[in-house]
Length: 336
Image (cartoon, rainbow, N blue to C red):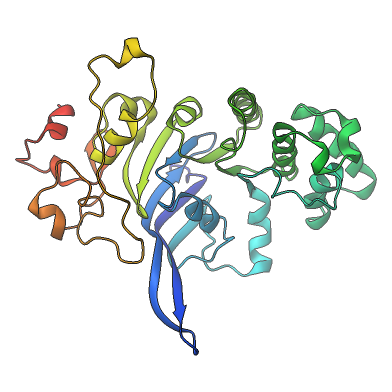
């Protein structure tokens, strides 16, 4: 019998109702996450990338049950947690933690750093009160902070130090999965590298699994084992990072990769893909393929028929009609 993946998401949806009028009638839905499926194995990092507003952060918060899913399933170690109540969900919350994007807004300014990191231990009664201070001090040391800083408040830290406090808080309960919601996007480039390297070291030491939400493909390439590309609430491509960066199979991924800055010597001969138009509204997404309004390879079929995410190459999934039998357009030839 094969072991279950640590996390499995099946056809997950998160729609936000739009209320209007005196009686707050529901007049529409924001389809933030519109039926995504993926898994994360133990010790693995899955990068989740896409433009702002594509649903990446909502997907991460929904699978942690910080937001209630509209439909679909969330399985942790093979156990379905989609509809569990607060009491039954509590043990799973210890196994799944989050690192937030803004390291200042996510820390309580009225609590010291030591109290912030120790709060999960108190809530979950995971450590005897007499041992809590030593446990917090050890966490500070592990993330590269001096234990003497436990008495300091968030405003006394730099951005990188605040994010280290956030990482220490996420580690406090010895989780198996950490969702990083763009954890380095608010930091300077030099500090980004330090935080990424810290997260990778922690992964090796504790066999952590990460869902790493980001829009910076350079960071994702460095830390991820596999990458899933989202567009307007759907996953349009998913594979190992080597295959994705070497030969993307979806036009949207091709456009994202063409926009990544690289040295001039390496850029010779690289085709730059410029997408036209704006990202459509998730309230009224286009019919068929959501990307067809901006796709340079769009066919008539793309306007009416939704492409399914399927395995085009071994372990390389894409949702694009270009890869159906008989399609001979430029992107289809890239995979040959």
